[in-house]
View 1 (cartoon, rainbow, N blue to C red):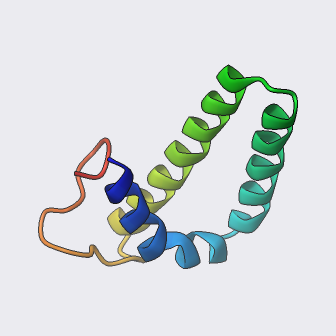
View 2: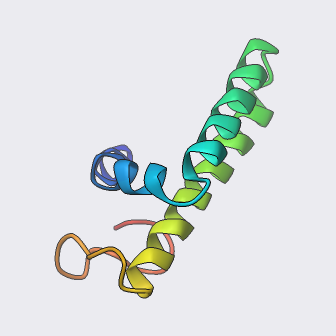
Length: 83
């Protein structure tokens, strides 16, 4: 699972950050995750990380569906997590 997310990040990070408000959402998410970690609140940190990853996944799937981003690899993308 970690390797799949790493591949996902490298392929789509740039595109996600160039989407409308992408960098703003990302910065806000990262600040919130860092604050949760500073407060030693692992449950909140995990919830925020999962929310952040889900938002990125949803944005990528939307971009693919609307034809603004190409799939990378045959049958690689499915509804749900990257397989």
